[in-house]
Length: 240
Image (cartoon, rainbow, N blue to C red; front, side, top):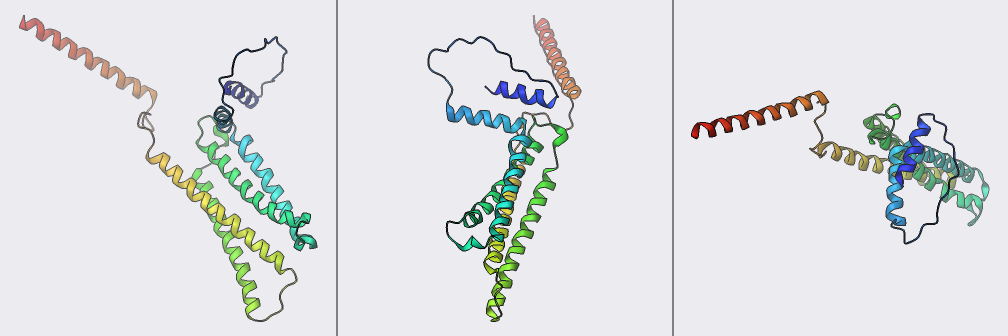
């Protein structure tokens, strides 16, 4: 099941021409051994590991742009305060799409950095990625809190409330929402990355140890075993 997707993805990255050829296929009998949920998730995991840029990063960018457009439309449309209007609906879907899109981008970039199946040319430093998301989240959260604080000071001082105060409040809440989600996602991702580094399986050879060293160690072990066996045989001969 996953092999077909792997062939298509690897062939596409190599620039090979893929062509569909008709072939005879008999109708299958009996019950299928595949499970829609578990096997489908396993197949999706393989696609994410093979092509995280196409399966997560690119869709995340599209979703982020769509969320930004929906939010801009909601802010510029005067009918935003009318419940059920398109602008009112866009004011809810826009922030949600921004959050989902930004997190999908981060997941795709992290998979590209850590997946052994992803192309090495498209990997970036996980530390730089998580630091950028953390700093961006802090900036967005501080900007949202600053806007809310400014509106609160205007109200407390008895000054004239801006005409677009509801829109400013929405921008502030969106900044806090997106910033907070970016901070939380980066913290969770950083914990997972640190856990993978600290508790990596001990069966893999240490970093920096090449195949030659491994082969040399294996040969040394074989020689030592042979010499031990020879000594044992010699001792048996003497005892006889």
